[in-house]
Length: 197
Image (cartoon, rainbow, N blue to C red; front, top):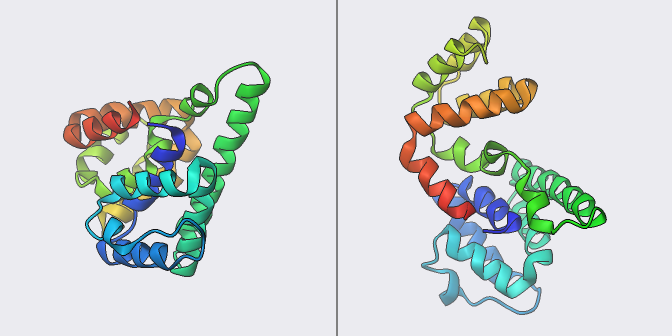
């Protein structure tokens, strides 16, 4: 799966079911050509929706179209995040192209947990066990552990993990999180790896 496809899938995975319905509706109402019919998206899952976006609006335009729709839904945090990640991927592609490399290998340099951030935030459920192991490996401090555990939902805990230890710990912290997720969220990780292939 291309970097753009993974990026869009991760973003759509962060939408609730109600938001996804709203997204589909706004996608059909979008004035851009070619128009997308309601029948095409009505029963589409997130991956199908990504395929429809890319096939109708091309790889280059699918992300800006998605950002525009998210902004019209007042999902401004998601729109901003998508825009920032797209910018990072774009600059990575530019560096790859200037050194003679292909676009996809440059995009593939982005760490697995960064590419799948939104899906991990949305779907990881075993946050307590993950935090225990991050603490054991000294990726997170005791006070950081308590701060994350104070969050009420798994989604907020994962957001806190990403904004705290994953942000400051760099590649070593992200590698550790990947290994922990392999043991604690095996089925989710397998699914996300298949998307990447």
